[in-house]
Image (tube, rainbow, N blue to C red; front, side, top):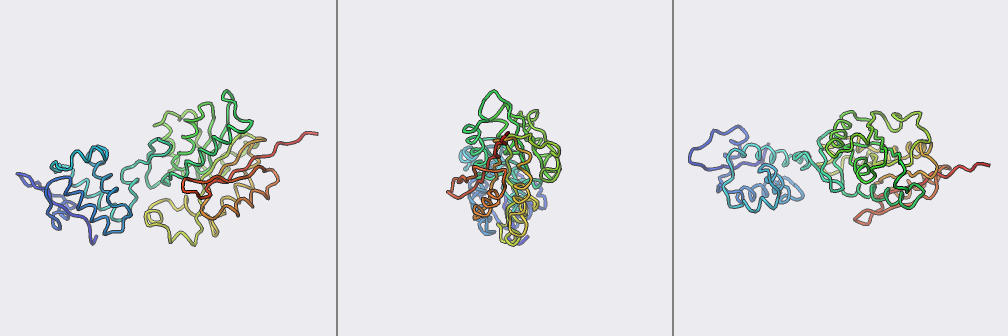
Length: 326
């Protein structure tokens, strides 16, 4: 592609270059050090509109060299190993095309845990950790707080499994069910559960919304969800890394971004036990509309919001009212 990155590594015996390496050689002649390569990579990524070119170049170099960013800086003046030229060139080319950094390295940290990610799943965001924080707080404050009791939780639209797995790590007594419409996403989620030792605690089910748990009404103490909430007219103005690479099914919230919430708020309360909580991540500016939807559900009460780390309203939650027996 025009503007693709290219570099040359000097050695006593010039290696035979692959097509990717040859592209680099044709454009740049660099000193054979990691520092020179880093500088050139930063320039290249910046020229393609990458938001944090230095950070991304450092992460990719560290990934290729099988170290971390701190380790990278101890090698800046070392010759760059010729055997890694092609691998780094390929990654740099892909990042210049705005493929997300997390898909290139294959990992994303969430709740201090490392998750496998690729194009089959949405990349977990830091603000989604507030779903986990809010859920744990509500459980502590509610009648569902006995550490010896078994909590049954449902994660709707689990994606990479990050919320379900974080809850499983924090609530070892919990039995967690996790659904997703994408069978490919569930493959990744299950791999992540295996990685973190909670696969026996989580039941992954494929299907739309609550369909996989049909017949389990009044069964869950908790329903959590980070649903698709981007309005269709806004999909085309998302950052290129998002709209060009992440799964559309995990982004598209319908004409106004609220389609998923209408369905979950309409059907979800039936699956909660009395005093059970529904906790949902929301998009920017959706608080009032989603609270209104929740308040129109006769089985829900104690609705409220929680803010993310940037101070934006990020979570809407509500509790199923306890059934009175006359």
